[in-house]
Length: 455
Image (cartoon, rainbow, N blue to C red; front, side, top):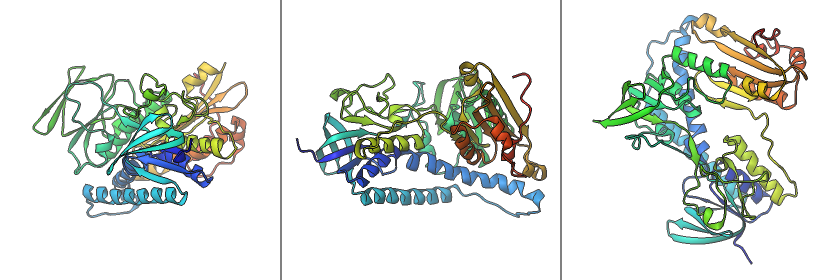
């Protein structure tokens, strides 16, 4: 059978673009379907616009900290519409760049919503009507989408998508959730002067992270002014006269101008026709794949958040590139999911790689814990009360560093470098033998000498 393409990808996000572009550069006849702009969640509705908002919010703290360093700023004013306008211009630029990257790799872009008709055929609802496209291999890379729990009154509230495009800053906002998105938006809005209340089901934010990290970050957020309601859930939301009355399970009622539901994302796989052609899905809609990213249908593959393996942009890109190398460059590659670094752009930010203390204690016979909490040098003059936390988890038998965690300024930048050492299996002795760069916060990672006696 003659196919229109050798590879047809559904979804032009990070994973889909990475796989299809690389395949195109290998000479493969490839196309990619996308109903929205090219770039996906990370570029258009996630990492990039969110980080731009984080940068904007940092200026408020920098202005405040500058006074004791001799600076005098007579008047400062923040304008949210200006930020939104410039942010959107940057996203437009990135969209153009992504389209150029695909074009330069001779990848055809098909605009419209795609649905599988059979294992080799996709019907695309384009602006000019339905179009059927055939391909030898089909790749699903449709990412994830925000979810809302079935709580009365919760349907009309914001998700992260809408929060990135608010026409104006609210005076009060309630954020539901304690994960990445929730703590990041809490930091952005709080620092920009919004009265923020964060509601979480757990006792601390960032479920799944190291317990010391969770406690320290939450303490810092509260110190900065975020009101935290822990171990409660939302019972009901009344939307009256443009305001939200949020009823909590403990009986408390919070009024807010905006309500942001940041309770996670689900695989964006509904209405793709996957099960109709035999592709097996998990209970949450995730596409089941093997170690080669192949689904239950031999010619259909999936990468990125729609598989719900490890939902991070660099992971989706790596999965996509590995797939292209395997299928089209005679270079079989499987993803290695061990020791993948992560960052949370909360305020203060979090960086982590390797095992948490709890995970390490379950996996290894005995571990040593090194922990340092200190006031950064900059804060000694600025008067800022924030404190940095650093932590190393070490396997006592081998001496290998198996976990590294940080809460504090530049955590993501620092952990990216540390991740190389952890990935290479560096020992605590090698950390100790590495000369410190002074004065820096990162030198703590190579100068922590005494393990905790109670650990």
